[in-house]
Amino acid sequence: MDEHEWLAEQFEAYRTHLRSVAYRMLGSVSEADDAVQESWLRLSRSDTSGVENLGGWLTTVVARVCLDMLRSRESRREEPLDVHGPDPIMSREERIDPEYEALLADSVGLALLVVLNTLNPAERLAFVLHDLFAVPFDEIAPIVGRSPTATRQLASRARRRVQGAATVSDIDLTPQREVVDAFLAASRGGDFDALLAVLDLDVVLRADYAAGHMGVSEEVRGAQDVAGQFSGRARAAQLALVNGTIGLVWASGGHPRVVFDFTIRGGKIIAIDMLADPERLLELDLTVLND
Image (cartoon, rainbow, N blue to C red; front, side, top):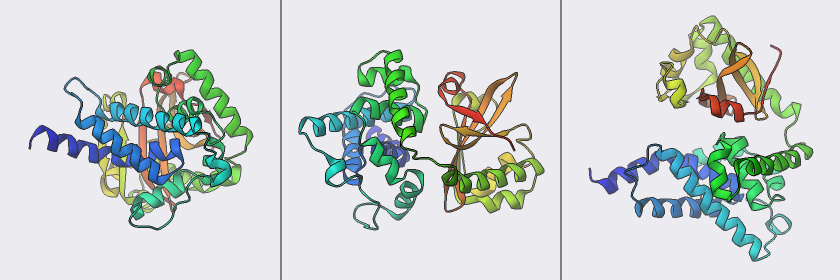
């Protein structure tokens, strides 16, 4: 396999993530695909020999592309919110594959996209990358050309706008909580079959480098293998709001040590992200819930 083929293979592994970032940034499926394609072109023309975290590098690239597109949209005085709003997710095979369609439909609502369209480009990028994808402010700052402190303020302003619009309600969180509750109970009780019942067959468990140092594999795929990682464990984990959605947190000494972020579709867990990097944990908005 030559270098170009290797890069193409690596890019495909990150494509769904990049499309998710771009869709939240742009609110348009077609524009998101354009942004991902531009990211591939930039990757194919770049020397990545010194890149240690290709996923993070690609996230930065697609974010820069989206920021340029948003600024161009503003400079042309386009008003997508008033004219047509964000693209609804429609079943058009030539535009989007069914799996990605379902993922987007469940993971980000049109109501949120409508509110995001009211933010300026820098606010939108800071909020999306930090609050939805847990990217640290010091990595977002160079993209928007601000200091980390100023970038934090951008995200804070955006967050107030989003929260003020009441895009997440207790009713919205109830189905998530029921699934995560069932997952936690099955994990604590070592009930392997109950774990399988809440996991999608193709569920993926991802761990950051800090969680990897705790003995967790960087990526585990498939319900059987993921269930094996949790069965009989998570006894000290607690339900928590993680950036406004239901997740789990394990705390020690009054400080969060590991956060479990869930992506849920159709009542099944399709992805679990384990975050243990202390710097990333400090950036999360965490609220422990009563069991």
